[in-house]
Image (cartoon, rainbow, N blue to C red):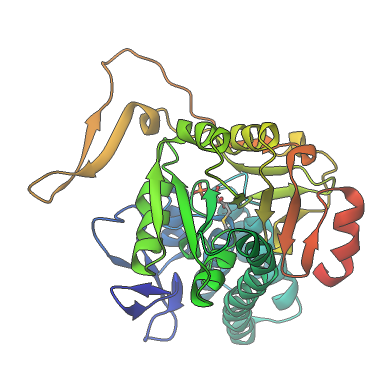
Length: 362
Ligand code: MRU
């Protein structure tokens, strides 16, 4: 996707052929900086400190992190240790576990240099597959926007999204944004309400930035504005992402998603969740069993931004002594989800709906 008219994906192999380049998302939207990862510790830090974030991108980074670990020691013991180390960096996004399992399985019967080579090939395949998966999610979701556009007589279709389930959260296209990008490329009038997404403001810093650079009409709103806009008929459709989807159709996404689903339900606004099937946790039958990441209270107590002089800085929102809690995700029960937009089709958020695509997902 485009930044200043230049095409990027979020993770790629450096020209040295072994180290890994990423866009440091903690610096966006004010600074565009590429970070080079050379060790498994670098990859783990990039995931934990959210230089990379978003479920599919976390998975892709972990896959390359394992390649970097194997370069140092390709033994079974070292591979197991690196896998556990990477897997521990963020608990909610299941793509982290998924990517590491796919990698381990692929290289299990290989040793030494052959194992390292196979790992790099598989990591590249995870990235390529993610690009294609997200493209397909876009094509599936486009039908929903087309249907709404046909009813709106040339007026823009207003889509509300939360957090960043855009291309920066994946490798290309994004999940929630892919139908929007596809609609925009087809010339359909589409406008996006972008939730700022406190505390880390992924909506303001990343989604709005992406849409701006792709020239998709959008408006940034505070997290609490969505319900009001829905009451006044200004939202035609909600599309969000998910970090983990339980086998019963419950979805776990960035904190605040649940409240948007409640407001959408109360106002008869369709609420869709876009996801690659790699985000489905077939081992869980209930979204409330998904581990919820609790992040540092500093993310709530402080605000990051740019000064007039152009420096990146942090300010205190309140006074020392104030306590804060920071659950990073919440669970939206399946009953509030109109449908799941996957690469294999749009299905009901229910055990039956998910079972209908399980074979394609395997
Ligand atoms: O904490 P983050 O920024 O990693 O959270 C990201 C989200 O909640 C996304 O909506 C989710 O990972 C889906 S990404 C396509």
